Length: 633
Image 1: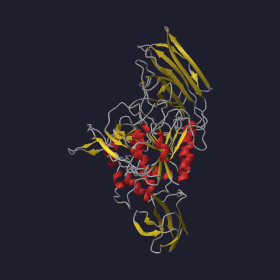
Image 2: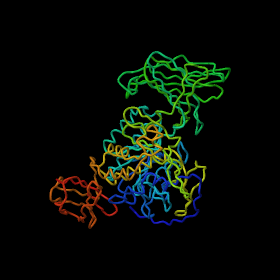
Image 3: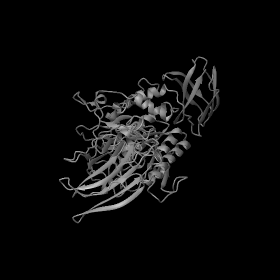
Image 4: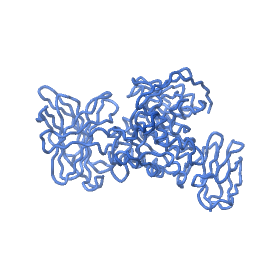
């Protein structure tokens, strides 16, 4: 890679904001600093040798946080803008524009304006996962990792699948492990139980070694979910309120389904139900209503109520039997009109009914909720809750799902601040046996990089720097969008330490190494999952876990061991341009047990003194680190 050298000049000192959680407070909260500083570890880890793919929008390719800490090497390998149709598209795809290497990326500046204008979300998230700080204290978790950016079009399921496949293809070409970070969630792309087209693709790519990490969502403070267990013929009603207006707002989308009444999960039996829409006046007297519509037949209807010359526009789509979970699905959309009150009625003989009240936009998608409430003086009405709030892709079994809490730290006066779950952080449970969310990570008032090309941000700046004669800023944002990439960075640290871990092992380690405190005890699993992410414990456990993935080094530098398993001696064959490569052998406790130097060709290693077991060879080949697993008999 061509080295690009620039100057960095600090222009404005940071502004202290009461209660601000700097990124450097999040780092010790997640015990990432202990990993960087090699506390109780054989070495420090920064994600080097791992790829983090960020699916988002609002990428500033030129931001200095995407260089290394010395401000010399640029760490973004490629970017795919799915909205920009001028091309060239990536190999194997027919749309969008791909930028390869620093010259193309820096010349492009940023992704194009799309459904979200010139946004900034992707830059901020990528900065948390792997930003090198650009000389500031806002260094991301895996600042040694390389990056892939995809400006993703979430209006189409295939675009999501294509983004993942493109990232996998690049990782294969580079011979690196891949972590895909997703700070977005959609409640209608797949089924809410974690089944569907996207779930199938996640399972396929996970089996090929891809680690998926996703934000849990930001609906923890709204009762947008409705639940009713039907054990005999019954009818219930619930008033729904329009979600808050944001973006190009249209109205409300009520998504409904009905599951088996014993397991509350999909099975091979269709459990039908019927629904209706009601419009009421301020006294909750019914002014207009649809008849009950059965889910036993597929149907799509566009219609309206006309009430005293005023109109209520709505449509609904019924899928009688979803091919993935055999459940009926309904999407009822109602255009916002504040002259009336609105409710749904539901009747069924059996089943565990669920509904979600989401924002509907005229373009793009809305993922924030509006509440369900009881109807005054209606004895058969029910209200909503904030449960089952994790959407696609976070609801998929193989995905590491991340809730958000406030970083805990000690202020200058010696008082401990923070630590509680963020009110907005979406709650579980998940459908099926998987814990949702998996863990929590810092996600409230996290300071990271802002895109210098955005036309959407109107808030205040935390710090401003000048780099290569351009102004760059850092801002504070809150959301599980921030906690998700934090854990993606932790996964990169783990894969650097042990690149043979399978995605299932990474998920299990993230959960089993999470730590508990008084906040996790009081809020419980529905909010925190297994607990708060602990990067140090996760990396230590990763080093002590025998991985099962095959890891292929880049074609420019390959090292093979023979025989393996071995006893007494092992021969390392090096296909490399380096004259010599330092090699350290670690046992699974992370202790260095021998050090050697490898040369081009074949090097014999005397391992007679090693006790039988599994060992990891860490080879420093120029600027890259390669690891190989050795079994001693």
